[in-house]
Image 1 (tube, rainbow, N blue to C red):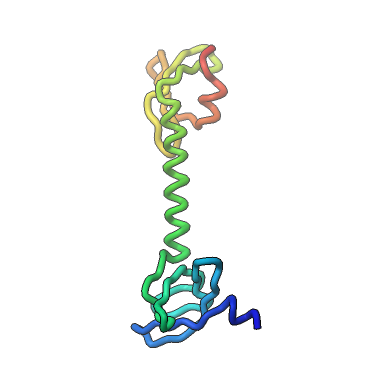
Image 2 (cartoon, rainbow, N blue to C red):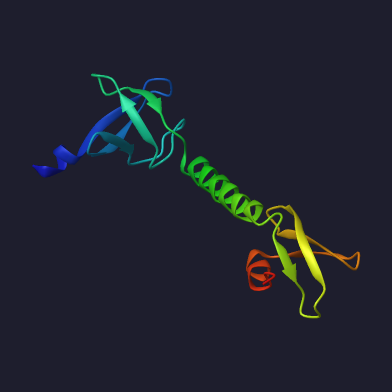
Length: 126
């Protein structure tokens, strides 16, 4: 029966729980919640089917992905530091600082503003 080829019985020896996990290629993922583990968590088991390692939970994976996206956005914003821009009223400025929230522009008239990446790109000095 194909069901047994895709699912295996696993055991959490610490909590003395038994459940199922699905096999996807060379990886194994829990199919139900345990006291110490969550559904969808990647695991490794020994020959007796006991869980010997568990990867990050879904929440931890999402947080890591969010951190990666934040780092990418910050890197994109930092590329624009030093860029020269011109406001609609003709006052020139330079991008001096980059954060996740935007790029700080220091203008020749002594003012500064935080612009988004798109605004900086649309006001580049020609």
